[in-house]
Image 1 (cartoon, rainbow, N blue to C red):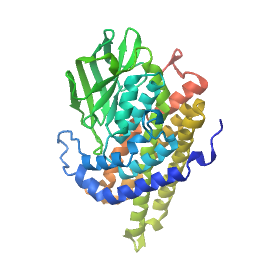
Image 2: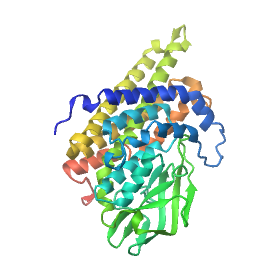
Image 3: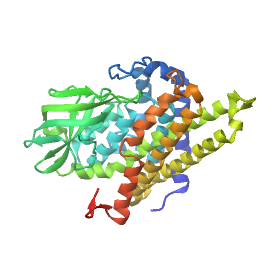
Image 4: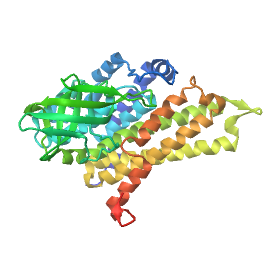
Length: 394
């Protein structure tokens, strides 16, 4: 099936995006954001989890957690393009919330639901009602590949989980974790309440002030049979099916944040005067701004092409999603550097808002793999594994 006109981004999707932009302009202007997450410049401060739970409640009332939940379990089942449009505005506002993590978990659970998992369906209904969820699927090396995990599952029927899930996003905001674990039967996905006996959340110190991250330690955590989202051997397929959508969500956040960096830096260049001219008069400033715009437009085009493919050309979704994430990671790196540099001396200060976006983008850039990683995966898929030395894949 060919992609529809404008990537399927119609009036309904546009209205959702515009309403989200107005919502953040009214309720989370950047000065409010800075006061909330950047009140303490001490580099030795403890890792914090700073977010407005009342604002999250308003997001739930707006139905944003419903968007990616399939209609059959009480959601709206909107297109991936609609979700991408919303998440662009989340990135533009650098919104501190569990929304990104919850959307990614939603796509994984929806893939499990295709396997007729009542546990996944039940959690999808809770997500639709506003329960924040995060994926606990990464091993100590930072790999989220479907087959890589440091958590083991033992037993039949009820299973017992032991091990550690690393680099869990917004872990202290989540109420439920989707845990990847290996059993004798293979990779499975298990639903674990954050408050369950044997669960310890250990905060990580990260540069991004708008998120929290942790590693989740599981010691003899018992998961009943009705909390198994994907039995051993089925989890790998669910994760692989959901990966394009997970990449699209992160990419959309990056594109939105990069757009804020461009617009804010361009406005500064129009108002900051040097040598009797606004600094935007000088080519040394003009050219980087144009390059920022070009890189963002490239990433945005690939983003919506990938989002549209998820719904209309699923056989192309992985390739397009990796292309989009690679372009967005590169754009985020470039735009972050130029936004700080073109603000001059003030751009390096804690009081200047650009550091919030610089740090969010640096976190996004490596989340699920940076540009180099995505291009390596593309090469593996399109032309076969790239050998190092004796032909082994990297």
